[in-house]
Length: 237
Ligand SMILES: Nc1ncnc2c1ncn2[C@@H]1O[C@H](COP(=O)(O)OP(=O)(O)OP(=O)(O)O)[C@@H](O)[C@H]1O
Ligand SMILES: [Mg+2]
Image (tube, rainbow, N blue to C red; front, side, top):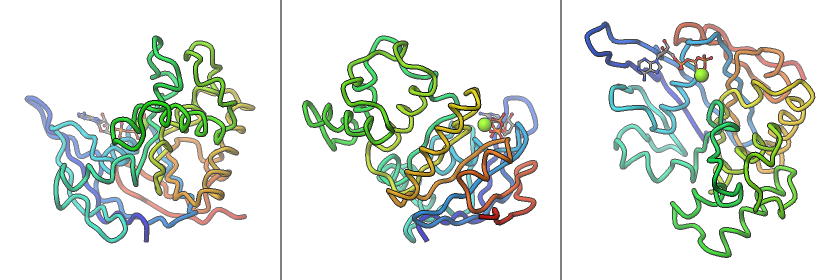
């Protein structure tokens, strides 16, 4: 299995209040080319679960259970165990990512940022790779030197996906990647994610509150309520 999550739990300590049990024992596994949907109402713990897989929760969070990537338990070694896998093996498109680009930096520079951070590419090589990534998500490479306001919402969401793919991950966590897009653009972004899953052999974990959306990119859907998976279904082909 590429990614195996066993009994994942997240508790947030809250100043002067009861702790919040946001994730209460979630288990699932995905392999190359799998599309798994996590569906549930607002506040059921979807984003918290994904952030736990990235090791990006705030210090007030206590995470337990097992997160195994290629057989290795990422939680066992704390931040040091997580860091080598973040972005390189497991990457995430954050909820609202299309609106999170800095307005003062070109899209290409922002896409290249994770590569620079990981020392995978710099200078001209990083610029070239940013162009390739844009092409991969259906945007002409020359647009790399445009600013976010020159992109439509759908293009910014594609660019956010390109950015997540910068370090060539095996697992893509996508948090509500089509929310706030109109229906036609939403369908195009779903098609893109489906194509990337098939062509790159990505394992995709797709989070949404919208069950019909998930059927377009996932073969399995897990329904989450109050931090727990209450049922898992195969999506009819
Ligand atoms: N940093 C935090 N500190 C305390 N509680 C938090 C924190 N982050 C999230 N929570 C709580 O954890 C629960 C799960 O939140 P989460 O954002 O994971 O839900 P979600 O399923 O992604 O919702 P949505 O569909 O609205 O994005 C909620 O009760 C939320 O208030
Ligand atoms: Mg969320």
